[in-house]
Image 1 (cartoon, rainbow, N blue to C red):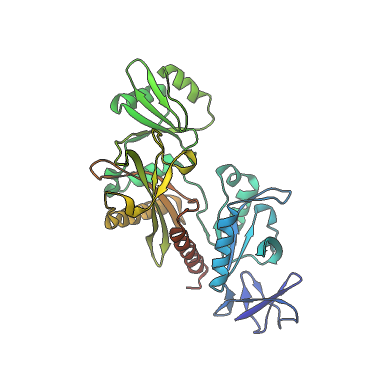
Image 2: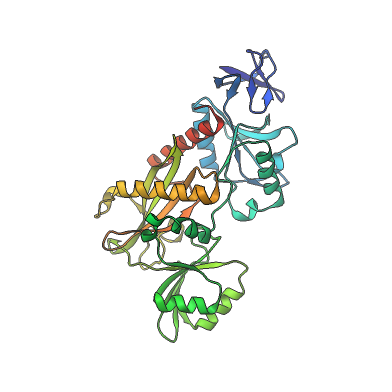
Length: 380
C-alpha cells in the first residue's frame, strides 16, 4: 500500500487507515512524498521509532553509520523508520528525522508502533527527559525493546540464577568493603575489577596478588604496584560501584589471548545467534577490545573450532534469564572467554551491542532488528 506525507500531514487513498497512533487523512494530495508500506487490518506501517541521545539545543548522538543502515533496511522492507530524541517528543506527535541523501530532515510523526532504544550511554538514559519519554511510551502501551543498560552485577545475578549457566560464570562479587576485596584476592590470586555500570573497558583493572603488594594493570598502560590500602582508597573516591571477577587462563591465538563476541536477537519466538566475532588482544594487553589495542580475525582462522551448538544453548539460556530480570530484552551481546581446555566462560552481557566491523554479521544484525520491530509492532 502507498501512503503520502505533505506539510506535516499523513495521507492514504484507502479511508480509515491508521499509521502508528493516528487516523490518516485521504486522499493522497498531488506532490506528496510517498512511502510503500504494509497493510494489516486497518493499520499501515509499521512505523518504527529509534530513540537516540540528544540535547535541548537539537543535537543528536549515536552511531550515524549504523543508524542510517537500520533506517535503510526498514525502508527496504516497506516499513517507515525515524530517529528522535527525548526533546522531540510532544503531547500528540513526535518530531522525527529521516535521511534524504546526506541530510536529516524533520517530519511530523505520529507516535509509532514500536520504539527501539538506542540512547548511547547510561548518563543520557538516566536524564529526567529520557525517563519521562520512556514513561510516556509505556503509558501509551508502545513496546520499547532494550529499555535500559545492564549493570554487570545485575547481569551476574540474573545469569547465576539459572543452574545450567553457573559453570560458565567466573566467580564474581560486588566490592562492598576492603575485607571482601581482600578475601576474594586470597581465593583468586588474579582478579579483573570492573565498573558495574562501565563499558568499553573503561576503569578496568587486572590485579595480581603478590603477597604484600598488588600488581595493577590497566589497558594500554604500564603495570605498577600498590598496597591493598591504596587500592581501596582509590575505590572510595569513585562515585560508582565495582565488581571483582575471577581471571581465567586464556586460550591463545598466535601467542595472544582472544575472546568471542556473540550477538543475539529474539526472532520468531527464540533467541538466535546473529553472528560470532573473534577479538584478539594486543601483545601483552589485558583486554581484547579493539579500541584498547585488540584486533579482529576471521572465525575460520582460529585453531580451536567453535562449538556452535553449545553457544546456541548458552544464548538461549542467557536470553531467557535476561528477560526474567530486565523485561523486554530483544537483543544482547555476550563476551565469551575460552580457556586452554576449550571451556567457555561468560564475562559480560551487553544490552546495546556496538556495531560489528564484520560486514556479514552487521548485515544479519540489521535484518534481525527489522524483524523484531515488525514482530513487536504486530506486522508479522
